[in-house]
Image 1 (cartoon, rainbow, N blue to C red):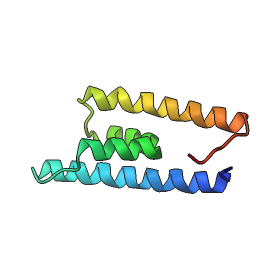
Image 2 (image 1 turned 60 degrees about the vertical axis):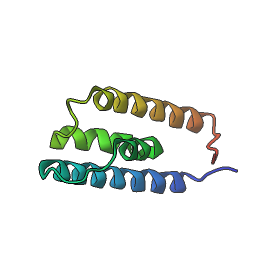
Image 3 (image 1 turned 90 degrees about the vertical axis):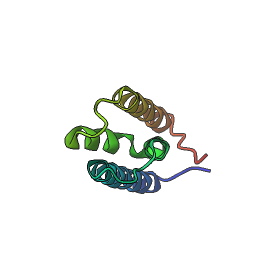
Length: 97
């Protein structure tokens, strides 16, 4: 089943907005020593398309910048996502999995 570019764009925008909101909320909670967003939740949102927004928001607000798994892992995940979209786009094979 082929996925339209509009659907993919809407998905990535939604994932990006969620990634920024969760990152900012987690930073706010961390400052108050309150309950935090789990790292697995942050990774799931990044994996589902929010890696770019999460990476940028973490750098802007200075959140988890000392965590190597985020500062190395998120850019690697983003590179993999960009490569996947590039390959799917140029082979004209956007598939809904």
